[in-house]
Image 1 (cartoon, helix red, strand yellow):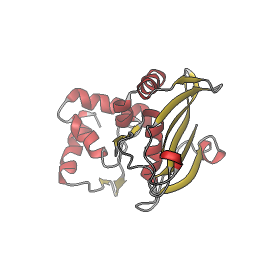
Image 2 (image 1 turned 90 degrees about the horizontal axis):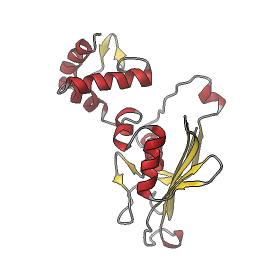
Image 3 (image 1 turned 30 degrees about the vertical axis):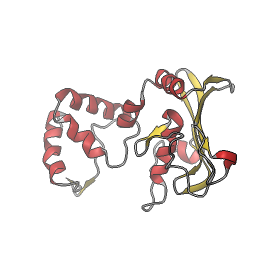
Image 4 (image 1 turned 45 degrees about the vertical axis):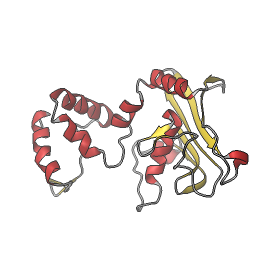
Length: 212
């Protein structure tokens, strides 16, 4: 329903994306675009950080190190409000330096899951992740393989299946459920855009196995 974050990577300050706004709900689908370094991946990092306390690019963020906090800032935050069949929830991940000053000693991160009324349902890193899995039906691995596919992982998503027919079937079913198409591949002039020789050799085999 909404994404809110502060001081992540190159996006200093506080940012808020309200996905219930008319411009998002009217079309039902939208794209995140912009030049390299504009912060597109940071938005996805914020979602993953808020829900699971880690990102595909940085894995876990802990007191021992935080490479996602914007330089020369003393705190960072990621928050996601979402709805499932179980209700509406808000998940917040935060971390700050001592006295919230840049250069201060890094403090342990906090991770809290709230229900719609604002009551905390879980407030420990492991407990929040477990509760998110219960509410969404997806643990971190499944989430980053189906709902949020990390930058540079699309080819791996396709190639992995060719070593295991069951994986191909699972990948196809997952893509069908999420996009209503077998696989979302950008076409240009009827031919796949070049992702490398290996990808071009694999794609026809994938279509054949998927019955396309």
